[in-house]
Image (cartoon, rainbow, N blue to C red; front, side, top):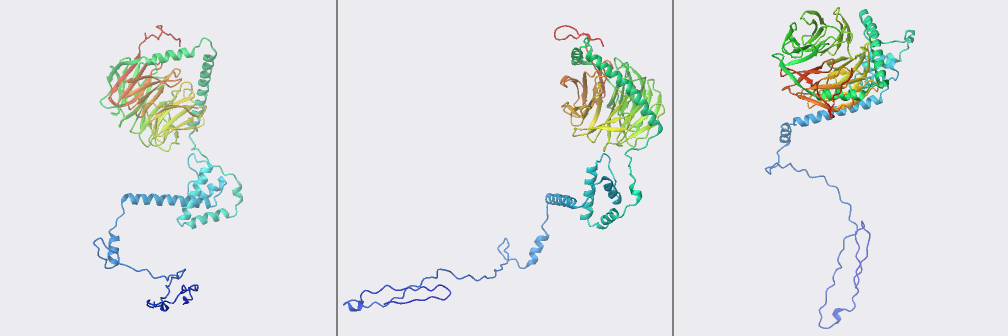
Length: 546
């Protein structure tokens, strides 16, 4: 018996035939008849497409297993959720970074003038400075692009469009004239006369220096290596000769007179004292007139007078007998350092008002107010020729100025922290600088770059000075309570002078390089000298005719 089974029309129709019965069971004796069995039904080979059902919404389950009654509980929980301060700071940084990125993208998309004159005009119409100190053309254009992008993002389009309209307006005939913007401040006639006098003085001094250098190079009798070796051996033999208390308050500066017979020291008490050499036991004079602490003292290179600087914003000129000659007033903040021009006619002072100034010591007039540093100016030095001056500041820069023209001719970048001291080598083309990064850097004015980096101390370098004759060595004072002497040729360590019990604030070297004076916050003055009978390694004494 055969049965045919058909399925729903949604699936392909399949015919299933039951197996044929070979023999009827009823025809066999003794066997009951077996009822016919329906064939099994099989699922269709392809399932029907399921019908999408809406998701079942279940109430949120709280921690105790119960469902929340309504949304008000959820809102109350959000109200009690607080963002940590670290998350807020991270979010603010991200928003700031995103804002800067948007400004950069918008600035790149804006049409910014490429002509420097048009850039200046646009900045003027937007009410911004047309130039900043030391700003170049590309930097000025980038500043304009940033400004325009910020105005556009902030929605201040009226101001920007007004500037565009003025740029697009027809130019008048007056615009054909070339506009020149002076990058200098007009000075008095006294400054012009001083520049001429400095130029004449420097030409003579430079000619003598160059002639002497040529003679030393070409003369076979001049043995520069032997002289350098002798000078370094002399410096290596430096030992503590004497020590004395200089004041009741920490000492801040010291200076030798030109003949080395007087040592001047100043302190935080505002008092400057003159001591008789070679032992600093007898006081020659006490100079009292500053109302605040004294920050520096220096002797004139040509006569017996000295200058002091103070936190009372003034510098003063004195005679060695204690007579006050001049008071230089004009700085807007406390003074840091003071230095005489090699001619002895001019005085340079640095101040925390971000300027250094040049004064006429005879009249007391301010000849030059020089800006250029973005932060306080601290160190100052004059080249021995008198043509150049160097200044250093808390902006981590050392600048070299041409006193004959008033221009900043070199900017030395390399220190990563404030530069506190600068000093020119007697050769005229090396400049040493020291600062809070514990380094002493040697700069070459000819190559316009750093010549050598000396990891000088374990603390900030408070002062650096070259040996005044030929620059055979240089000395550095530091807040690590040491004074180190370095070779002027390969800048290797020659001698370390240890003896102070606190920060060493200043040092000075006599004209014949026979003595080094140091002053410290431990209130003591120490003199370091070398034995005159010291012998070299071979047992012979080297005598050099200077």
